[in-house]
Amino acid sequence: MSKGTVSIWNGEQGWGVIESADTPGGCWAFYSHIWADALPELKPGHSRMIRGGYRELFVGETVDFTWEITQQDGYSYRAISVTPQREHPQWTIEDTPG
Image (cartoon, rainbow, N blue to C red; front, side, top):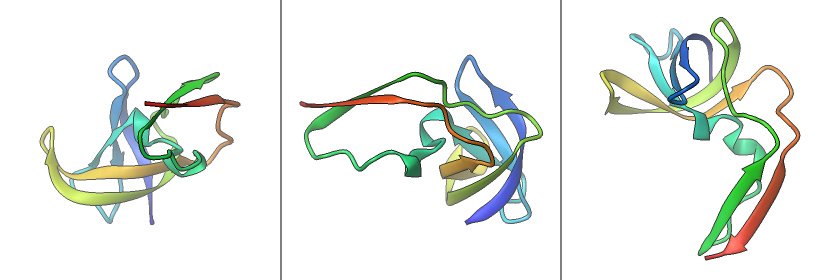
């Protein structure tokens, strides 16, 4: 896991960039990967509705994240799990069979 600082966040489009010594040039991040580890595992064939709070980042915020090497919108790294250093929103999670 790496530690970084959010340098860009586009709330309307749900993506941003995390700066870290581990990911030179920045690491692209998408809202669906924020607090991804805090959600229970989704059963095969099910879908999920999450209500009660936005998954967003804030410029200047410190986060822990895991990443992969790829090409994503001009960045060589993409976050696959992002954990902000604050409490996540109180969610209502509904899993339904597909």
